[in-house]
Length: 236
Image 1 (cartoon, rainbow, N blue to C red):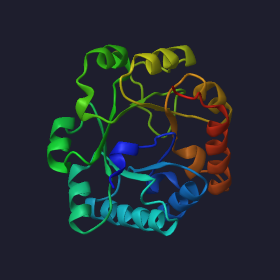
Image 2 (cartoon, rainbow, N blue to C red):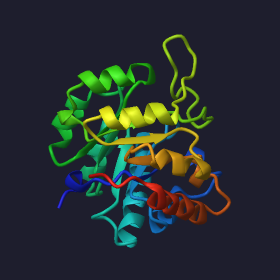
Image 3 (tube, helix red, strand yellow):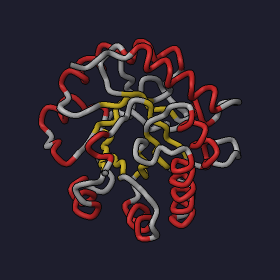
Image 4 (cartoon, rainbow, N blue to C red):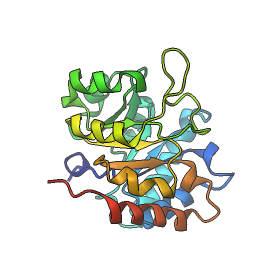
């Protein structure tokens, strides 16, 4: 059974070796999944394709160990080559996440097939326009943000004139209302942001450092996931 049909992006963890303060990526992925996170994205701009494949293998392994391979989606950021190579090696990767300046979603869809998940980061300054006009039939969710400026991804939310645009809760509520597909929001998200974010009606939050750099990643992940569950709007 493929996860595309029942994708859950409510608690979404993004991680690579540059985010974990030197600790193993797989262990922190395991902590997050055991704590209730529903989606994992492996993202690194610094390691080789081979290392990314290995990280993906390890992440798939720990998700399987927790018995959640049929519930927790595993995605790779930006690297179609890594997803294809990992699958060739028998690694369960559920899909890819791309930005608008990365490989086009049509190409991802063509190579990965209809059962795969394809997520897209919409450019901040074009977000509302894009959501109204884009053909979203090939995309499973939008990534939006940042909620705050974030050192994990300094160019996140960069406008055409070089300013970082952050998103207000009111804008995110409008985004949730307009978007024909699920929306996940991140960018410097902390525990205190979860209640107001959940109440905007978006479908989930994503974090990197809030879990990956925490002294106790499992405890932090658990607090975030529980806060989301306690505050989210029930969708009709």
